Image (cartoon, rainbow, N blue to C red; front, side, top):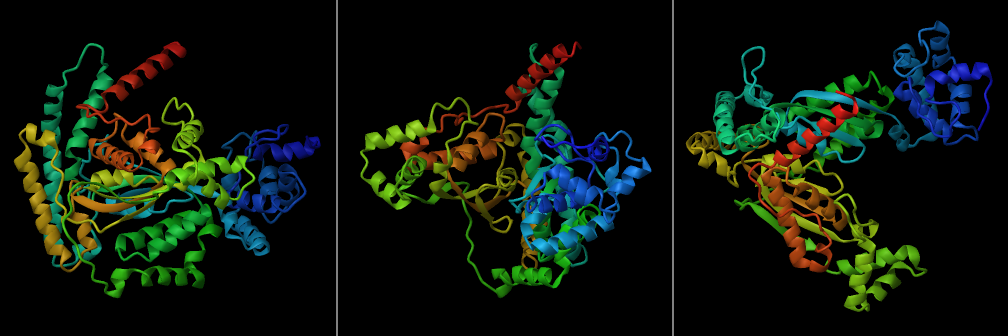
Length: 542
């Protein structure tokens, strides 16, 4: 290990998690400084600590030395506030100079930021989450949280789309959203009572677990009434490069909410990672925005036919030689042959040998987290899915695949939960759905994109998913698990059946598919949580 003088250690300790191990964490540094540090580190013979000391702490342009000299850093423990002390503008200027010497966009992946997006519509969350790489989102759940609270002005919490709010559709838009929220709120106690009567509390179930199970089941049943305009919250962690592209893309979106969101995100991220979010305002950024706008086919007047679709999953395309592809890729690291030669070898292999190699490659899976290796990424499947928007909203967050959705509307009808019928509230549910369809049909004639906001989550949307077999293992086994919502469990089960029908020798290794139906999906999960809570309390002597 490199040695440092006592003075050098004093200077470094506030910014690293340890001084005597080869693995350590940076702390108390602005994101822009972290990015510049790693950039410089990649082209230096020095260690990271030495680079930090010589070229950053002792660099007066950045201000770390001034922060230390001021004594405001205290003992140097994490969270002492150095980020607030270091002059962001100086750090930014220094970083820009570093970038001039590198000219590599990947440098912007070395620093990131957390950001909260509150009171945005459900429509907006999907457009933001279309960004798949470099961003990690979390979104307020319609499965565990009631959306029945009005704002400080006594209004239901839905986004008032500006083009609709100032148009001839304003009254029908607000009236429909109010009706949907009103029906949703009115059904909460009624459906909750129905669920409680269907599932009386047993002696072995805690009050916490029982209430959580009833609440989640109630949410699952009635969430379809919420319009896509519903205001929700989400949080992101992302790197600078991902934020730059996301903001650029949002500026080019035809919806006003997206453009306003881009402006707000850029403004706030400038306080933390300013150098990474400059480009959308540059000529290069504006050119990219124009490119995105100009490649929208609907902007070119393309007339695409539409027809109602039935709920379900269809495998529309797949690699029929998937077994050969997987075998060749599995053998590749252990062979001296090129891939072309291994594919030819796999084609001549007896079926018994194929199955033996595939079984050995998959191994003895003990749980769904034991996934096959990278060879399974060589087989691809494309599914066409028609299911309700609430279901799509849950599934959309999977990122290791290609997804494309059609515009949300009421063309494909809606999902009527069985429990709504059984509890006797079908008429109320249908009345709200019919009102929403009428509003959508009225608005969509002139403003089809804005009309999406009035569509409830129960209405179906059609989308396409292309994934490799490795992701299919992950997706189908995860989303078919007992605690999942019945709607997306059926999608996962349908995808598995399609793969099984097409390639049974590969599908049989999906050992952790749950093909059953459950009355109360969250019950067992809440029981397990009870056990964990009890173990934790016992461990800590409570």
